[in-house]
Each structure stands twice: as structure tokens, then as C-alpha cells.
Length: 268
Ligand SMILES: [Zn+2]
Image (tube, rainbow, N blue to C red; front, top):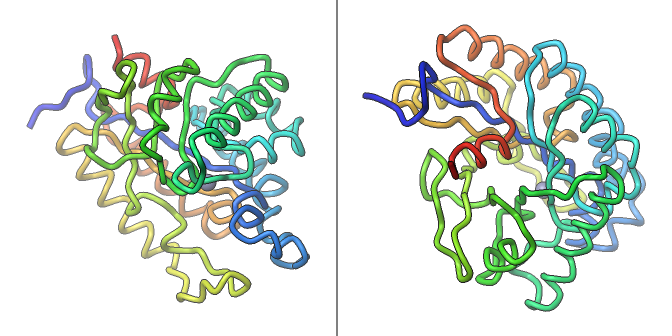
């Protein structure tokens, strides 16, 4: 089956890292701010996981996209500069990781503008990519994204290649995601928040993701992986990701791209 990509490209791999840090937990339940152990588990993401991920991507010479809530950006300005300096995209992920569907339209737009201003102040570049916290867009989100100059969203699941969504006010590129290609459903374990499902082994997740990639390759689609540095940045799991990247790179016609570059290419 032929694919949709130009030239000899058979599959485009897009690695996205949601650098949530403590933000999502604090938004979901402000009381978690009084739990130093739980907070430290989340803070591991920006402090330890993300630098480790940057090192690994650098060794492979591949580019990726990082979705950073405004609060995490403000409290880790150097990290944003390091991400940008390494050639990766810094994109929008709310201020305190607020799922848009949980806010009034007025509040949603306020949060969107605040996140844009923070990223632009730190990096000097306005973000053009957006991923909604928890992948919970509201009915107003896409029109707001268009109004504020975004080129793509990455929160929906309607295909396994980029597609155009007709939103009120114009068209926007959607780079679709899926829970299957996300680290959180397999590994997230947080008794403080009541999440006590057993953690999957890296081997199990390697099997799911490598077969997902091989399917995307066979059908000539996109392989969009969503990860969280506090989850995937742990030593055994990042080794698994490293192994997966080596596996994917062994196939001819595989390209690793930032999501904003694919969105621009797709729009053309
Ligand atoms: Zn997130």
C-alpha cells in the first residue's frame, strides 16, 4: 500500500514530550502541593527526565517537540532555552495544564494568551503548535487557536496521518495522537492520586510501540508518540525508547520530524 509522504519517505515519526512537571497535579488537586514526595516525583520530569531525553535525542541527531505548560516554563527558563538550542520545538500546553473542557471560554482564552506570552518572552519565538492538556479540547479551542495564530493542534484521534479540521474561522492542521502511543496509560502509578494500576514492563511497551510503528510503516502513515519526562525519563524506560529509536532508524524511508515542521509541510 502506498503512503502519503513525498519522495522516498515511507513513515514520519514524531516524538512529542509533554513536560508537565507539577502543573497538572496541582491543577487537578491543589492539595497535592502539600505532598513533597508526590511533587518530587513530578518535578523529576523537568529536572532529570528532560535533560536525559535531550542527551539521548542529541546522540541520535533527531528532532522532537516539547509541550510545556506556562507555569513549568516560568520556573524552568533555562530548560526551555536548552530545548530550543538543541533544535527542538517548544509548543503550548496550557498554563497550569488546564484541560480546556474544564474552563469557561473566557478563562480558556486567557490561559491560551498567557502561555503564548510566557513562551515567547523566554524563547523569543511565538509557539505555533498546541497540545491540549489531557487531550480534552473544548468546542471553542480550535477557533481560539486560529485566532491566536496557531498552525496546528495535536489532541485528536480521528486519523493516523495529519489532517485538516474545518474550525469556525478557518482550517487548522491536526496531528493526531492516541492513548496506545502514550506512555502514561502503561506506566503511570501515583497512589497519592489514587492511581494504583500495576505498571507495565518496558518490554511490554516496546512490543506495543514497535508493532504500532511497523504498522504505520507498512501503511505509510505517521507514528506520533506522546511521552512525559517524569515517566519515560526513568532509566529503564528511556533505554527502551532508545532501543525503539534504533529499531525505527533501521527501516529505510523513516524520518524523524518536529510536529511544527510536518504541519507546515502538510499545509503546503
Ligand atoms: Zn500534559
